[in-house]
Structure formats: structure tokens, C-alpha cells
Image (cartoon, rainbow, N blue to C red; front, side, top):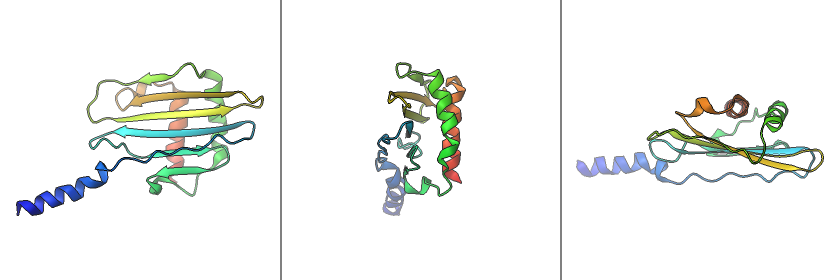
Amino acid sequence: MSRYWGLAAVAFMLPGLLPMQDVQLALPDARPAWTIQVVTTGGFLGNGVGNYAASSEGKIVCYPESLCSKGFQVLEFQPLIEAIRAKLTSTSPVLSLDPCHDCIITVMTITHRDAAGVVQTFTARWNDVGRHRIPPEILRVHDAFAAALRR
């Protein structure tokens, strides 16, 4: 009987023990252009809740693939990207990691090329406890992106 429970425990935990796959998209050649990448880690098993990336060309990649939605609309994100770009610079990373065991840690990286060809990259990192200290513009992009993937 204990052998059965041991096998059941391994079968239950195995998906969580597998490492999450990194998702990346190259910055499109167009001007302006952007990419968003969200990587999560942590949680009970340490693997986060999924990783996803999108570009201004409308490309999207997710891991696990079940996160990707057919309803993703690129045009929704251009105003949100512009709002962040106007307020942040590539030298101002945003970090809000409060002590928390088993919290999900989210890292969102946005890379933007403007019409003049200047590329800026900025990154925000937060966990569940410190989310309230992240600038609202960043959370709007993250939350809109996550909602678009669920459509």
C-alpha cells in the first residue's frame, strides 16, 4: 500500500518538478516595435504559473502552450507600452520582493524600439506580497497581457 502512495505522490509532483521552458521573441525589425516577456517562478513547487512572450508583430509564445489564446490582439497593447515607455528608462528597474515563502515571483521585461531606432529595455520583478508597490502602468500591461491570454 505504501508503494502505491509513493508512486501516486511522484505522479502528482512530476509535472511541477519539470523545469519551466524559457520563452523569448526577438525584437521585430520595424520601427516602432516591442516585445513583452513574462517569466514566473516560485510557488509551492517552484516552477511558477507559466511563461509567455508577445511582440508588436502579433507573435506570441507560451509555456505551457495551453496559456496561449487565439484572441490575443496586438493593437490593445501599443497605448500601454507607450505609457510605460514615457515614464520609465532602461536604467530604472523596478523591484518589489517582500519576504514570502512559496509566493509566485513575476519578472516582466519590455523591450521597445522607437521610431528613431533607439532601443530601451526595462524589467520589473515582484512577488505576490510586493505587487502593490509596482507602478500601476506596469501592472496594467501585465494584467492586460494575462487577461488577453485567457480569452
